[in-house]
Image 1 (cartoon, rainbow, N blue to C red):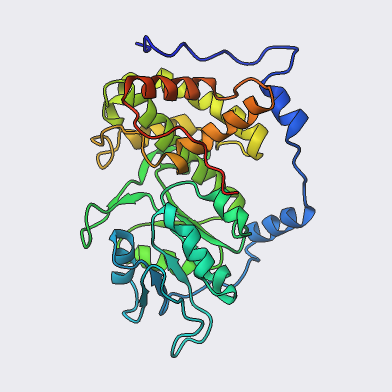
Image 2: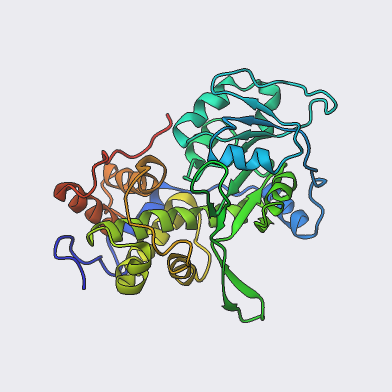
Length: 344
């Protein structure tokens, strides 16, 4: 059953007039650079940069759940740097080539970037759970060489065993397994990070940034849509959302996918709904209660697309998402401020 509050989502855009289609065509043109195409082809041919090897590293905020996990799977020679402390330029026996794992919440990432010596910013490894793309773009740290990770596993407390979210959902048309909740890494230090993950029996996949970005956006959609729909249904678990309210999730994803194409030049990977429902139904995930949180780095990214369009007198391209947010806020089920994130 659909909620009594927010109206049903609008259907696919029809014909004339200025609407969602106009958002991409009229105001958000994308410049194409042939260099990035050639880099991608080289990556597919296996001609990318030499694989990095795990070794002594620096961990900023290395005493939390993720930092402790990475430290315990390292070589035993890591340096822990506290928040606000100086990041070293060199390490004994290593020299200047080593990764700097940024193991802090999203709201603290910018302070780490600003405190990092300019010689080491390209060695920063971002392992945050939210979508920090706009922040990284502000500092030019969102390219093929910059290391970012989607860590699709849960660590309940410091030192506890990680619970992998990875789910196989049958073969695709080529006989290859379809995977939901995949841990993915891109950038210079991808191989080094994957080595640490493998020591914990977490399978990591190395991707080109272009492909990794689509996986990252899919995770954001899962975090934003499934939890929003569940919150407006009395905080149902994410498993119940997949089981009983899949229609609402699918309708919202359809809108968001169209908006991502027009605003961020990105299309979610084919089969996104199947993977999201499989992940929501997984044993390590299905019990989790729905909650709209970490707004700035999840729903706030989508809401920013809506606000940008409406500020330009276009229709809201994610109207269903916006209406659900406002309805939940009015009812007191969502307590965070509905302010879209702007790093500038």
